[in-house]
Image 1 (cartoon, rainbow, N blue to C red):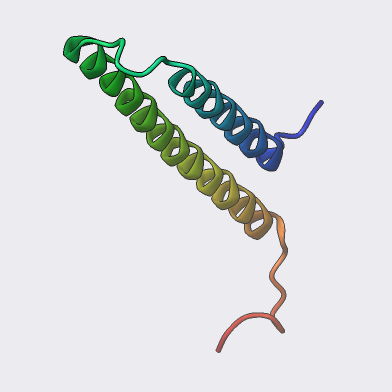
Image 2: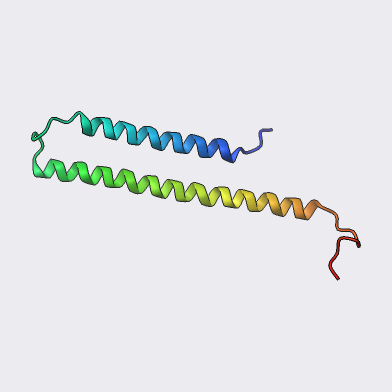
Amino acid sequence: MFAYQPRSEFHWQTSQLKERFTTAKQIAQNLPGGDLSIAEQDELISLLERLRDERLCGLTLLSVSLELIARRKLLHIFSTTPVSTANRLS
């Protein structure tokens, strides 16, 4: 059975986000100047803002997920580690 790899997941998620931003940047750079109406410019700006918001939301969710995984691992370590009388605090 595979163990969950949070670093691999983080790398994959960030790679996907970078790819989406690269694509959006290329599309924006290839637009001919002056050909978009005000409504089309507003639509493009709205699309880019949504992409930015999705990125922030995705990173926040990933961060929370990684923190939960780390806490579960710590809880597992502490719950399976025997405590001897020498290790107890007085």
